[in-house]
Image (cartoon, rainbow, N blue to C red; front, side, top):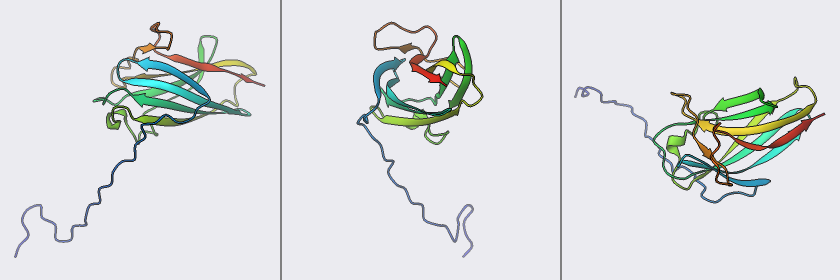
Length: 160
């Protein structure tokens, strides 16, 4: 018999596995509640400065299922100038926000080499934005005052 159009004689089975999800916030150095629009909440962060290597773990929680894939950013600023940054979709583009379930907690590891920066104090900030329009998601920190700039400060570090 001739195979039908699109029929495969030696098709391999497809294995479908459930995605492992967490709905419980992990322990973290700095807990905070900053809400991005009505979709995301920053629960807190862990910051480690190893010499001139910044290692940051952000803990996000989806407030609802999202239809859109957002990008996050981390900025290292000196005064008002961004001197180091990363922009990415979560998990280096491997776990977009449209896959997150309502209530799911997602932790994101970020590493930035700050070796080229002069000694001094720097501020770390983060936020989310629409990669199509570049419009940042409005953020409301725990104090309830909406931040007009679309980012929330995580704290300061001092480079020696």
